[in-house]
Length: 169
Image (cartoon, rainbow, N blue to C red; front, side, top):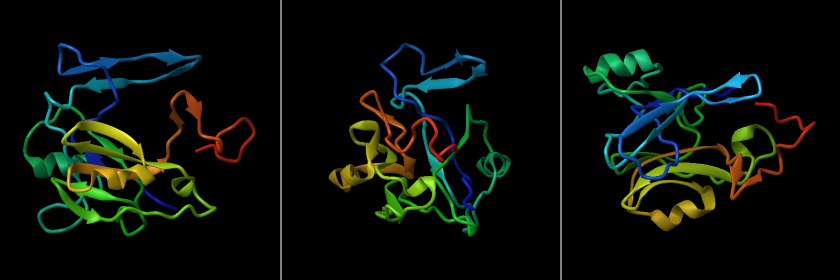
């Protein structure tokens, strides 16, 4: 079993430019409600945090809040982490690659369903790219986290996620 324990100090979802640096909406699809946070990464300080000053994983949003000693607008888990609380895929903080890209397309577990993706902040802004595209940005990545399969891209749903599939998570 893997855990998702690293946190972003803010959440990014792709958006068009807008006047306010952060916007929160609560859309519903059927009987399911969501909270969507849109932000302009040029106007907010978006950072990835894995370990504290002593080298131990934060393990919770509360631990991060306490360590930062300041209020942040929002936090969320990111990436997929092993039982040892280490990222199972690429992890970059402030331009330092702490874990390299995981190129496996193993047959078990959603993380390994290819194509999987990498969220990153680059000199060209925020991006979500296929793992295979990540290398094009070498040396220009400030923050990055590799996660499971890209569920939808270019309005096409990932082929592993179809009605009746065993991929419910």
